[in-house]
Structure formats: C-alpha cells, structure tokens
Image 1 (cartoon, rainbow, N blue to C red):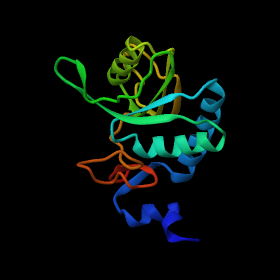
Image 2: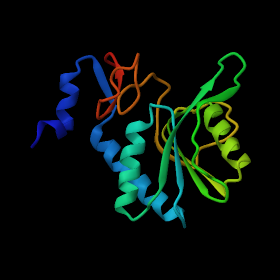
Image 3: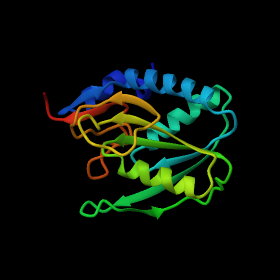
Amino acid sequence: MNPFFDWNKAGDAHHGIEPVFTADEIVAKVDDLAGRLTRWFDEEPVAQVLMNGAMMFAADLSRAMSVRGCVMEMDFIQVEKNRATKEANFTAASNLPVKGRDVLLIDDIYDDGGTLSFAHEHYMSLGAQSVTSVVLLDKSDGRNTNMKPDFVGFKCPDIFVIGYGMDIAYRYRELPFIGKMGRA
C-alpha cells in the first residue's frame, strides 16, 4: 500500500496526539452522510463551506456526493464571531447566487450554533429556497442553542480537537484523523 494512504500509520508519526475519531471512522461517516444528503436534494445545491476547518470534510463529502450523481456549486465563506457580543459577520462572503435555490452549509464543529444560525439566516434573507446544514462534529451537548444542524457526523466530547482540517495555530490540519493533544 502507498504510505500516503496508510491512515493507520499517521497516528504513529504524530506522537502525543491521541485519535478521537479514526480515519476509517471518518471515511465511513462521510460516506453515510453523502448518501443521505444526495437523497435529500431534488436539484443541485449551492454548497457553502464555513471556515477553513471544514475544508477536508467538504472536499471528501462533495466527492462522495458526486460519485452518487449529485452536482453542486461550491464556495468558501468566513464568518467571524465577536466572543463578547456574540454578533457574527462575514469576513469573506460568496457571490454565488442563491435566490430560489437549495443551500447546503458545510461546517466542521457545531457548539453554540451562533455561526451556523448566522449563515442560515443570511442565505434565507437572500431568498434561498431552503438551507440545509451538515456538520462533522456536534459538541453542543448540554448547551442551550438556538438551532440544530440538519445532519451530524459524530457527537464529540467537549474537548479541543485537531486534524482533518481542524488546527491549532494553523498546524495539524493535514491529519487524516481527528485527535486531541496529549494522552487520556
């Protein structure tokens, strides 16, 4: 096997990072979500990928949906949330037209719902026919949130995770698994 794709050895190369979700678990979950989402949409959705952390998830999800015959337009958006006021705004927005179309929001982590809610309201205000959300990790357990994602990959403990697009100081996005620093 090509060592580039030997995901099981990736953990060995990064000592001190304990896998929370393995590469094999992620592949299976993305495949499941792609099947469910492909059946969900009657027409081509406009995919909006939130933040940089969702890049790996969005790439794998969109390819898995494409294999099933789902064609989509895709763009990346950046939302910044003020921690003190909880207000959100775009730092990078998409110019893809959404009026009368189905929008698919793709995000990496759902915790308090602020970013997802902001994006959902924004696209509805632009005349989207529908806005559907999919998140890889749900860390909202026990939190009071104003909306829930439509599709969820994994329930995640309330820990800081890295890998599969998620980072610490722009590092470890390339990991094929999702892990935490240190040993349990």
